[in-house]
Length: 84
Image (cartoon, rainbow, N blue to C red):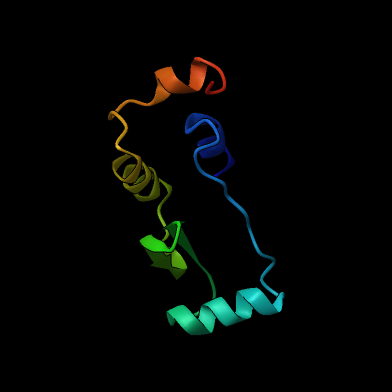
């Protein structure tokens, strides 16, 4: 997921929560997952949610691109350096 930080030039921020942390256990219960998952928010808007073995980095990439209104191939953005 960290590569997406660079690709989207700081327009997104990723963080992981250790599975034993109370926050992680609360998220598992809240989203109805068995053990783990991933969520994507833009502000308070949830745009991606997948649990357990349905988490897919490609799906998350596509949703991020759509949410941010970016072109299909974002690699040029990643190599252009940080946004002004």
